[in-house]
Image (cartoon, rainbow, N blue to C red; front, top):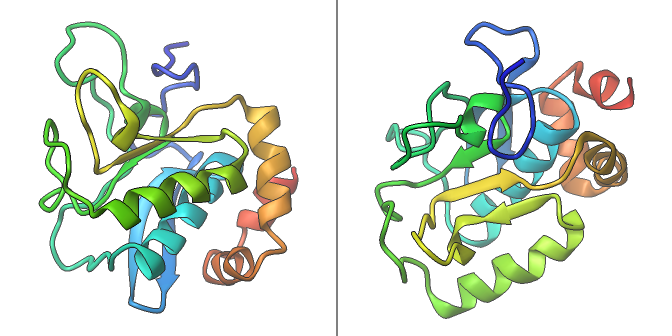
Length: 175
C-alpha cells in the first residue's frame, strides 16, 4: 500500500475514508475534503480556529483544499501528504508557495502558540526551512496520537461545533 510522506496510507479519490468537512466559522462557512476521523478532525479544528482568529477563509475563491492524489511538489517520487487526506492548503492566493513573510508577526506567534494544543499532531509550512509553504498544514504524528488528541478536542467549544456540523465523525473518531 502506498503511503504519503508522513506515513499515512494514500486514499484514492472517492475513498469512503474521505470526508468533506464543513467548517462552521463565524466568519463564514467553508468546506474542505480530508481524511475522515481523528486526522481530518484535528486539521478541521485548526482551520476553524484559523478562520476565526488569524484570517477569514472565504470559500468563494478556490484557493483552499485538502485531499489531492499527487506527488510532493518539486520531487519526482513520493506522495504528498495531501494524497492521504492529512494536509490542507488555505488562502493560497494570499500565501503562495515559496514566499516567506505573508503573515504578520502576531499571526505567526498565535499559530505557533496554538500548535501546543495539538500536541505535535500538526506541522505548519510557516516553519519549513528549505521552501516556505505558508498556506500549508499537515498531520505530523501517527494514528494513535491523533486519536488521543482528537478525543480531547471533541469536548472543546470548537470541537462541539465541528461535530454538530459533521454528523457521523464522532463515531469515526471513537471507533
